[in-house]
Length: 314
Ligand SMILES: [Zn+2]
Image 1: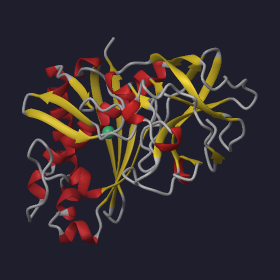
Image 2: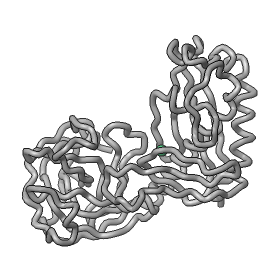
Image 3: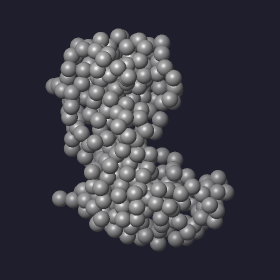
Image 4: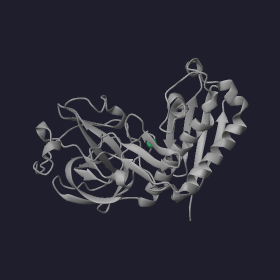
């Protein structure tokens, strides 16, 4: 996959019929890209609103609506989708932001937060370097690589289940009150999470058990001493949850703008689990036959690497 490093280009006038998305079209004709990945959709079509022939990541195409999931620019845990735009291969998908002055910035180069006034948020589809770019204003068929999406969705759902299981298995290791997760356990995942990335086989999450976490009341020495019991507890919990076949829904509140806040929800036997999340997910825990975790604690006890590996049901 080609990494996206730096892109600055001028946003051309998209030439869209503004009445279609009247409330989404901002001054200057810049349009927020609508995304439909929350429903699990992998196919669709979109009208080309701009193209940029040369960027560090390859030629770039923005459409008004897309099933492609872009890698987030601030927390890029789930890689961008790949697939096809017509008969051209899409080799990566990333967030793009159009500045009020017209510059288009991509991925890690985006210098502002999502709520920055005047900026337009879009999905950039990156094509192969020798690709033929579609004309602005034309409609293109879009098809995500559904098998790769299924694997990334599985890894992402498994990652959330593993996080909630870790929270429950470490609930008694806190000496002070801290924020709780949606199931009522101290939210070690959110309080200690340093890094998270999904691939087609699973997810890798790195937690930091430093001085500040100990100050908040976490017994990291106790965690090290009970590591085996914690892992056994996590696996038992994951088994129960998978057996429940609980439904998973990514709730977007009807807002399909790419920057809209989305929540992962899962109707577990203990209650409705919720985690803010911009990724894609399986529709039910029945998709899994197992989810395994492997914990690697740093020798000095200050860091934990969790590798979560789902096994898909036949
Ligand atoms: Zn997530």
